[in-house]
Image (cartoon, rainbow, N blue to C red; front, side):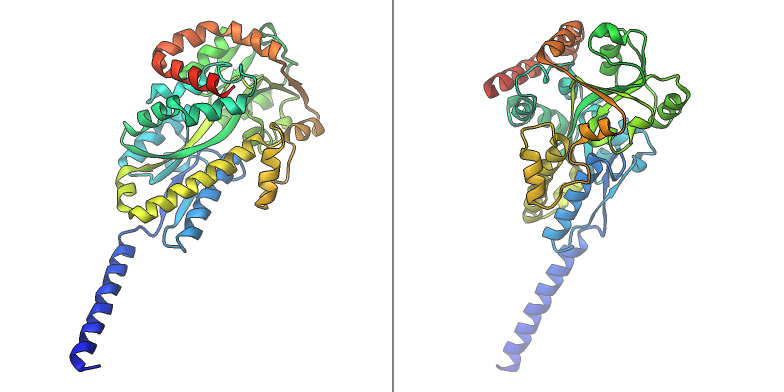
Length: 359
C-alpha cells in the first residue's frame, strides 16, 4: 500500500471513529425512569426488567436507571406527567390513575366493574389495550407531548379491611377507606356508602395502626403482598372493581435523540416488559399461563400464590361470584354514567365494542 492510500485508510478509520464517538456522546450516561412504588412491588420489578433489557440489548450503551418510591417527584404522584413533558424525567412506568387528572380518557379502566363484569376480565383488558379504544388512549397520552412506548399492568384493585367480610354494598356503609386521590375514586366509594379518605400511604398506615382508617384498595400481587397488608387488615375482598394498567412513556425530546435502531430496541423491551409485568400481576389469578411463562424465563417470584399468602398470614379472602359483582355493578351505575360523559362516550363505546369482540 502506498503512503497516499495508507493515509486515506487512516483518515477513513479516524472519521468512522469520530462518528461512533459522536453517536455515543449524543446519549446521556444515565436516563431516569420514574416509578411510584418500591422496587419489591410488581410495578417496581417490571421497571427493573425493562431497564435491564435495554441495557443488555444495547450492550450497555443505553443506561436506564429506575428511581423508586416517587422520589423524582418528591412523592407527588400526579405531577409525574408534567415532569416527563418538561424533561426532568426521561422515562416513566406510569399508572393510568396518576395521569388521569390531566388525561380524562385514562379514567376508562377506573370505571367501576366495567372490565370485571366480563366472563374473562383479563381477555377484556387485553382487548381494550390492543383495540380501537386502546389506540384512543395512546393518542390522548401523546397529545400531551410525551411518547407512548407500551402497556404493562399493576393489576385489579382489591379491598382489604380490618372489618368484614364485605359481600354486598351495604357492608361498606360508613367505612373509612384509604383511596387514591383522583376524583373517580371518591365518587365510587361514596356511591357505595363508604367514607373515602384521599391520603398518602404513610398517613394511611398510621391510620390503620390507630384504628381510625378501616381499609384500603390496591392490587393483591403488586402491592398488598409486598407491603404485608395483613399487619393491619384481616379481610381481603376479591371484587376486581377496577384495573390499574401501567404504561411506559418517554420524554419526546429524549425519544427523538435515539437512532431508529435504538428506538426499535427500546420498543422491543417494552413489549417484553409488558409480558413480564402482566404475568406478575396475573400470577395465580389466571389459568396458569402466568406461572408457566415466569418459570420459563426463570423469573418466578418467592410468592407464587399471593391469595394463599394472604390466607397463610391470617386473612379471610372473599372471592366474588359473577352474581356478587353484578350487584356492585348495579350499585355503581350512576358513577359509570357520570364518568362516561367526562371520559368521552366515544371512548367508552369503543371499549365496550373491543371487549364484546373478545368474548
